[in-house]
Amino acid sequence: MPLQTDLGRAKLQRLADQYARDAEILLEAGAWSSAYYLAGYSIECALKACIADQIRAHFIPDREQVGDFYTHDLAKLLKIAELKDELLGQMPLSSVFAKNWAAVSEGWSEASRYEQRNEVMARELLTAISDTSDGVLQWIKLHWQKPT
Image (cartoon, rainbow, N blue to C red; front, side, top):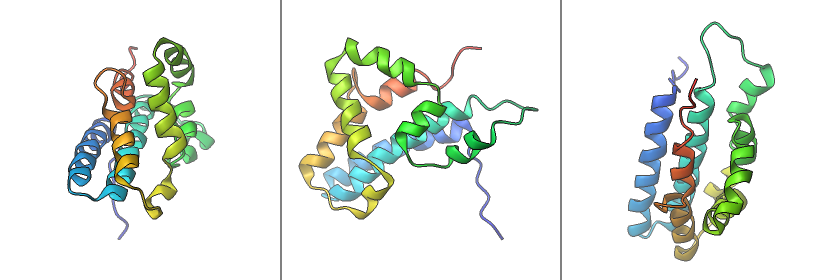
């Protein structure tokens, strides 16, 4: 029997927060590679929460968009979430945010789960996503539910 998954916006939001918290716990436990991967995965879930908000009842989404929803490519997810222009607008406003986005988008990928990361790398990524004023996760949360 196939595994049933409910990937609604609320669940993806909870997962994004949970994975960010779990990454902090793993970091403090010295599991740096796992912390690094899970921190990036929280951003993937957060972007997918934004995409889920776009899906409407009684509407058949574009076939390519549906397939791309299952990607782990953050740049693709950012585009599908319709946040690329907002990101480009935010980066000149905060060099810290721009640095944090670069740490996430250039450093993390699905393949990160197979790579060894040290403490410095893990802490840098966790800071990039969780910084209270310029963190990537905090910024995505501003876009979880677009006004209709």
